[in-house]
Amino acid sequence: MEKLIIPEEIKGLYVDAAGNYNHIYRDKIPKTVKFCKKCVLSNQRPRVFFDEEGVCSACRYAEVKDTKINWEGREKILKNILNKYRRKDGHYDCIAPVSGGKDSGRVAHQLKYKYDMNPLTVTFAPIRWTDIGWRNLRSLIDTGFDNILCIPNTQAYRLLVRLSTEYLGDPFQSFVYGVKAFPLQMAIKYKIPLIFYGENGEVEYGGDMRNVDSFEHNASDDLKDHYFKGMMPDEWEKFGVRNDYLRPFQVPPVEQVEKLGIKCTWWSFFKKWIPQENYYYSSEHTGFKPNPDGRSEGTYSKYASLDDKFDGFHYYLGFMKFGIGRSTSDAAHEIRDGHITREEGVRLVRKYDGEFPAKHFKEFLDYIDITEDYFWKIADKFRNPLIWEKINGEWKLKHQVK
Image (cartoon, one colour):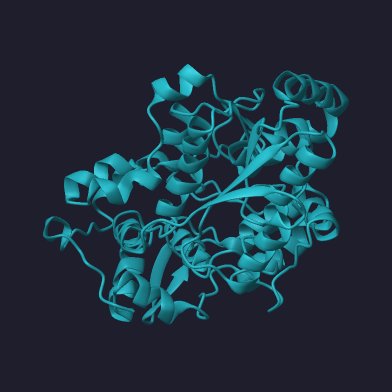
């Protein structure tokens, strides 16, 4: 791959574990590591909280889903909303962001074929598509959807992925910008005031509970607090990133969103969110296929986050920062859903968490134009000393789930 063009203003931009990373995360995370008594999640996950019994907020919400939420009542709320926005003139009446994955596939398919809506599906391209990711998106579209696909300028994408890796220890951050910004951009462009996202990740996986009882997703504050962590796209300008590079990743001005009255909501507010059931549904109705290699690197599962060749580095660097890897996220939810026991989850986490995503490593290095040595310098700078120690030249976790 050709050399990445890096503006002079940002050459040498690099922060270590004593700099911006501290400001973004570490000052808000507990200094004592604890693991949830019901699942395998630790208190190092940003914004999660544990109660006096040592149970994480995601597990407590799972109990609420099982025992306190009236799902028939939520269905009535959903139907009332859809009745308000449904159109019969051929115009799109809602937007469904889709990747081709199991979750977004179920949301889009049910909107169209169960509730008689006419969704426009929109897709922000992953950094580097996997074959199975592209195949699953095409299969979903082929079941009867219009789709608008945004593939941003490759130089822009590469540069932002490089910056996100160096500055935030998360190569996926630029992708997150686009995934959240593009549906809003299309809602304004086509005057479609209703957007359906999949799950409220904060309440489902352990985080900010401000919207636990709300079906509306604030298009400004929530995005900034939960998804545009550390640096908004506009801030890259001060480092010399061209404004036209940033446009696909920028959320529209709040006044434009409010003028159109755009409502952003989560399907998981209305429907009990169970990823495994989404997999079965999409396999049957949208032709979704799991990872042909079997399990994904870093975990035991085969059907989650399959679209991008580089997603493994998002999970791996998260493991450096929080001691929480891909297997922890999968196992924690499956424990809450009753699919595996905590004991089984512990074994899976200890076996697979932190496995290095070797399959696409060379391509990832080429994409962001760094050496293998520099990658390890970045990874080691983001290792949280609270959870890592070096023993006989090898990094070891100080605390493991039991």
